[in-house]
Image (cartoon, rainbow, N blue to C red; front, side, top):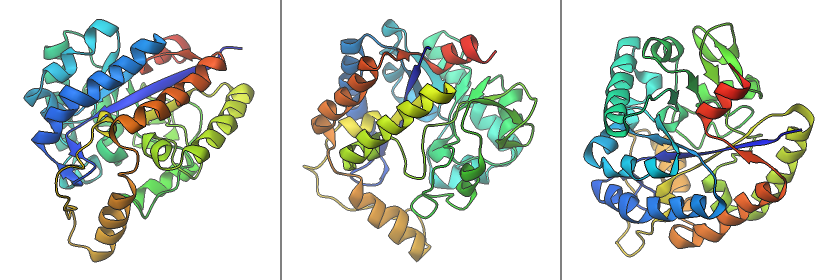
Length: 305
């Protein structure tokens, strides 16, 4: 039985060190984070999917161009990662505008069709499926089925829907990404179970991530669920030499404490080059287990359509 691993990368200007969006971080992602990440994939001779924020691609087009020679997929991560412009607070028309702006700039830079999407901060609402379909997207990967982090991220209450979402890839309902339907949009759920299974977890709790890998490998052996993992190139840069001030992104004191202060202080462990051996060991596990590495678009084309 074939087993599949879909490595995905969210490319944005968010600074983990300062907990805010910064052009300076975008430069570091371009010059440091992306080259390190691409070198890892080259070492293992694997392809992955890069979800680019549109406004970053517009400012730094080379961040998109640099993945093209390696055959990685160019995908959309929306137009902006601003907290107050997340998809769960945007209207249908606003979402379509963000999607088209992102799609147009990415297709103009890459000269390839962009059909895969992941919402910034994984925040979506009832308008998102139709907005994606009407702007030409074929898949979404904004649902982390059975993951629970409702109180440590923005949009947390709506993310409780993750707990009841299907685990295997599925056609979505017309007005709900968390439910099966008969529409043309395919949901590729991020792998998770209560605890997140992402680059942050890998850096903070490598032993827990190792346990998760074995657990999810058993699941794949039983139901053929593809392993879908998410990292960020900004995890491979180091800004610790600059004086740190954790930016406040909300006026709500409880949200500020949980989503900014506590989460912000936790997420800086093993940033920069310290993350490289952790990610190489992570990938090596799936190489040893005989997984085939596909882009999201390749997986949808071969196993869902």
